[in-house]
Image (cartoon, rainbow, N blue to C red; front, side, top):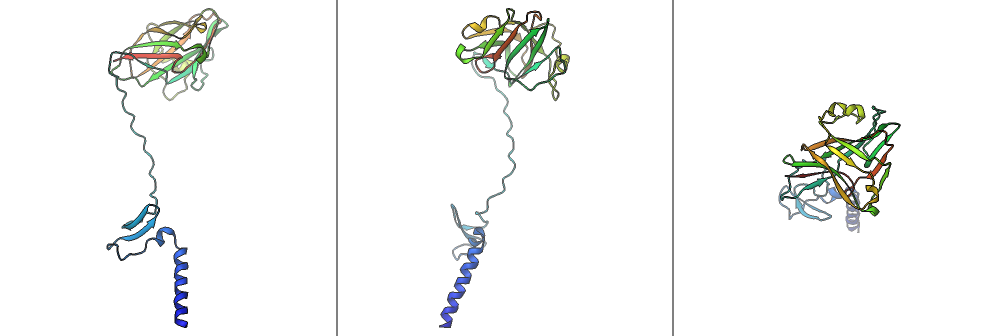
Length: 242
């Protein structure tokens, strides 16, 4: 029965070739039920007639960064509160020393001078914002790190006219922007570390979409050290209404 033997041999060869083909090519076989120009495919969830191979994953394109929507003023008479987008330590006695952004309030004076001051940045303020005010707050005792060493915690807050974009944030690099005629106000941290949650206002400031401030201990002879963690319930804040 050479004829039957040849048929089985041919079928075996055809199956071997088909199994050796890639899945997407093997599935791309013409079907009498497919219209002209389409082929039958079967892979995963795809089964039917297609003009293009659905079994081949498309090459992903580079994701585009969505445009950040403009911040809108909230409706209603209440005030909105923002925490800093960045805080930097600066050092008057080491005016060119720069550090990465930090996550808390730190002010120090010793050796007869202010030694550690801070630059505070608030961003994302709506262009329509008005009656902006700088302040600080402390949360519940169990939910905060708040340490005051020294009896004089009075600190000056000054609004800066700009920021050293693209440069290290140092005492010297912010000097050109520290040109306000007067301070925003004073804040006093002394003794508050022993008390419960409270909010404190320093004074009104000129509103802008991004605001910059410098905070420093007023009395360099006080030998005061202040540390306060910064989060939603502690540290510096800006409040505004629209």
